[in-house]
Image (cartoon, rainbow, N blue to C red; front, side, top):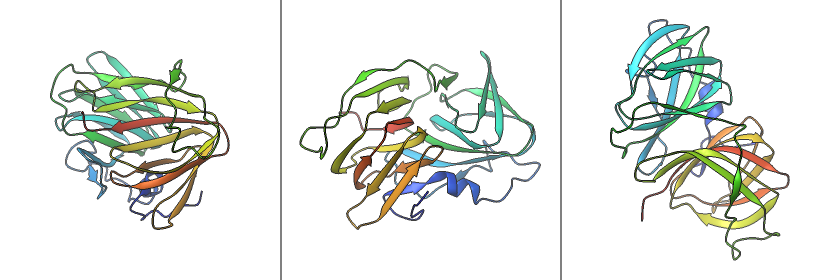
Length: 239
């Protein structure tokens, strides 16, 4: 992977997670020891849960939190049952949800939390990487620099105000001109690759297994020479 991890447009979250110190044995990864990253994410915050081997309990009180494992594995258990996350698997923890966690060894999790979410229906929503997808819209014709792609998606979590959506998306190859991000999107590539160039000439290519974010306010191109499948967590201010 080739990427500028400090570029203000696209940030390699998997690399950031891999570069953090191992958690202390008595860490509270979902509480006092969570790490908030200096990332422009609109009404969201982005950070890391570094989970030690062991068990613990927590309650999500700050918002609706999308969580994806970048290494190791962790089991999250709420009143409805258990959700296991290995590398490349994700879920959403609703605001107000109490849960326990367990890990056989250290695990690194990246999160994107929608701070505008109000406590409501509590629970953990698993984002199924193999869930069926339905046809979805493609990029605007005036932005495309290639043939229009065929896109599909499945939003498995949508916040009550529809500002925060998480799911799986795929597309045939395409390229487009720079798009200004009035929104913010965290992506994890399940297959394929995508390249970006921003207004300052910073460039990055992400491939299968990478987890990254396009910041709120970025202005960047997209080029995917092969089919792409991704997990997404997107914040967009409601109209």
